[in-house]
Structure formats: structure tokens, C-alpha cells
Figure (cartoon, helix red, strand yellow):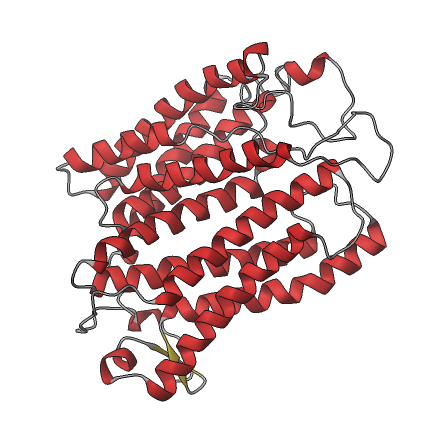
Amino acid sequence: MSNAVSLDQVGPVPTERSSAVPWYLYALAVGSTSIIVGAIWDISWHSTIGRDTFWTPAHLAMYLGGILGGLSSGWLALKTTFAGSAAERGASVPLWGFRAPLGAWVAIWGAIAMLTSAPFDDWWHNAYGLDVEVLSPPHTVLAAGILGIILGSLLLSLAWQNNGRGPGTGRVQVLFGYSAGVLIALFALLVMEYNAPNQQHASLFYQISCGLYPILLLAAARGSKLRWPATTAAAVYMLLIAAMLWILPLFPAEPLLGPIYNRVTHMVPPAFPLLLVIPAFGIDLLLRRATCKSDWVLAAAVGAVFFALFLAAQFFFSEFLLSPLSRNWFFGGDRIWSYDARPGPWRYQFWNQAQDPLSLRGLGLALLFSFLSARLGLAWGGWMARVKR
């Protein structure tokens, strides 16, 4: 028996699945949601209150999600190893004498990384104070662990979907689409420093977005058996972010650290989510009608569709988000500023117009990144469509 995980083993396995959706798939979906909610809540906590203790509700929500994902995957590994049927053991990957589906191993690793980051993050804040960047060293470890939990949920849903029989398969397909949307939300949080509405008339925003989101949307589209997989994943992302935008300001809160330049009386929410559902719908529509057998040609077409639709949607929508029309509870146009953000007209202006304008060169790079990202997404999605362990 090999003690190493080989991706060559992640291939077709002739197993029969019952129609009942296993409880651990729901547990991982709940855990992933708790993590993302906690992460958004934690960013809001830093923007509203500052740093008072490690044991904030936001941190507890994140680590609860990691523990839930790790324990449910650990249970699955123990059950498969010691009490699994021949079919379950055949549809598993060996590691150090234990057996479990690939997604369970990824989620277990993610839980370990998350729990490892907790004391590291506490020490970092005590030594250096507030983070000036989202991806500080402890947050990088935490982000890797969160990625493991979400990818584990994605892979377990994939294995069940690709092997499944009966009416439960449809629910698992929805769970896969949901996990893909949570994954998009995670990466959107990681690049949130470049996603502000004020930055959406600069080339860098479109280069980052075109290099990041097509790979996620295309992977979801090719790996899923839903009718509108990319649209579903993008809609889940938008609903998660928008829900936090609408819910967080309902709770009163005040800063505990200085200097305080902005009078904050309620939790600061995230900015309105990107309109990814528009290019995602275009991707789904194109893939449903495409007859080309070359993934390179298909990637060029899909990359161009994403670039054109995303640029058209986000360019004009960002103007709306900076206008007085967006300053309400739904769009949250004037609620996103932290307690240390000085008031001024800069809040309602586009930044970096002189240093990084929307030039032909900048947009050309964005289009190139969209093509490369789409090609990687098709390759990743093709691999996911074959995952059965």
C-alpha cells in the first residue's frame, strides 16, 4: 500500500452511490459558509472597532468552520479506513495507512493550517498591531487553510456527483455550485484591496479580475453538471457578499482604537459585490452553444466574452456606486469607510487615473490574462469532471 497521495489515482472508479446525500457534504458546506462569513465579519470588525481581543465572534465563526470541516473529514477518513465497504475503500486515496476521498484529505490539511495560524495571528497582532495588508504572514497561512476547506468541500461534492445515482445527485450538483461560489468569494476577499469602486476605472483592476475570475468560473462550468453552473457560482458569491453588506450595518458598534477620523456607529460592511453574474451568464450561454473541439480556441472566445461583458458592466456600475444614488442600505455606497478613513471628496472619485489609466495597453493585458485564465479554467474543470475518488 502506498503512503503517498497520487493524483493519478483520482480517476474513474466503478462504484454505486445511494440517493441520500451524505451528511458530511452539508457539514463542509456549512463550515465553508461559516468561514467566509467570519472572514468578512473580521474585516468589518477591524474597520469598525479595531483590535481588542483574539476571541472575537468573527474569529470564532472562522475557526468553528475550520473545525467543522476538519472533524467531518476526519470522521470520513476513519470510517473509510476501518469500517468502509469495498466500494468506499476503492473510491478513496491512501495516505499513511489511512484511506479517504481526496477531498477529505484536502479539508483535513486545511483545518490543520487554519488552527496553526490562530496563535501565529494572535502573536502577530500583539507584536505589530493592526494589519496594514490583508495578506499578512499569519493571514496567508489562514487563507491557505480556508482554501483547503473549500476545495475539500468542492472535491467531495465532485466525487459524489461524478459517481452518483438517483435523485440525490441533483442536490450534490447544487452543493458543488455553492462551493464554487464560496471559492470565488474567498478569492474576491484576498484581492479586496484592488476591488474598491474607486479603483474600477484603472487598468490594474481589470487585469487582476481578468486573470482571476475566468479560471474559477470556467472550472465550475466544466466540472459541474448543472445547467447554468458559472451563473450559479457567481450568484452565490454575490449573495454572500451582499447579505453581509445588508446585515452588518444593523449592529451598533464604535471604534476602540485611534486615531478616529470617520464617525462610525454601526458595523462597516463590504462594498457591493462585483457583477460577475453578467459575464458568468455569457460564459454559460457560450459553452452551451459551442461546437469547437479545441480548448485553445474556446478559451479565446470565452476570455473575450468575459473581458467584454465584465468591462462594460463594471465600468459603468462603478460610476453609479460613487454617485449619490448608491448611498442607501441596498448598495451601501457611503457605508464602507472605516473609522480611520478621512472624510473628503476622494471617497467619491476614481483613483490612479493619471498613474494607471484605462489605456489600450492596459486593456490588452487584461484581455490576454482573461484568455490565459480561461484556458487554465477549462483544463482544471476538465480534470474535475473526471474526479471520482
